[in-house]
Length: 390
Image (cartoon, rainbow, N blue to C red; front, side, top):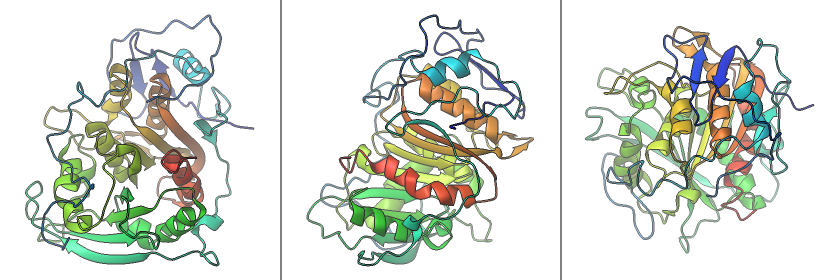
């Protein structure tokens, strides 16, 4: 049985007005404050949208893209169409049915044949064979370094790693995968280089160069993770495009097609990935986020927090983003917000707005990577499927 939780959060309205009341936040995301009228047309089929040396900076070469702060604004070429209104069974159900309690796993479940939609994955969780070295699969190389000299984050130093697959020869641009909290992914339980080796060899994703970057530290060794990841503005994505990527992979041929460029992470790094794609959909069209911190951690200059995004997704023209997200019934609930509830708010907003998305839900706790580990290979396969021509 496919089950999904819509927990103690009221979700109403798709473009006719959105009101979000989260049980764990100081202030909910705001909208027009009206309640949607249940559709009388019956559930429709769910839809998808159409649409370098460390310490230095430089430009990417060939057809690669270094990005910049001069990309299209939200009102320019980043849009792929206006609000389509509620069209899927999940959108209709989650919009018009206030959730009962945290045990409502079976409410509003839907799963599309292509894997897009909402997916409940019960425990136990274990690493899949995607993370195991396979006989005959070429092994990529991983190099490491440090980066400093940022104009956006002065006085900060970052550790990074670069994965280059064995198949890369520079004859054509590679895809890109940038991962926040990089040490967790490149050397931890995710075994990302091995997963990429296997998926590239299988043809499940294109030849892909990956950059893993840890949060920066200042001269006193203090992490700048919250500043970089939790602030809902363009600073981190502009740092990545204008400074980090030119310095770390500027010598490689990397595609400038956003449908070939992914960014991802977990917790605050997961919300940072979505923020990056939202701010610069011309540079990152593929978003991977698990246990995303779409809560009230840190405000931007306008006083907005990352809990603004469900309402912003519904209120804005659709952007050319393909989004994978994951959470669980035991995710965090504290003074900053409720991670479980905001996951469902994000899922509902993406569904109602007609985005291509994959929303996984399970039962692991926030600090436990077992479910994200278990789902990682499948999530990456889905994320890059179109880029791989599948």
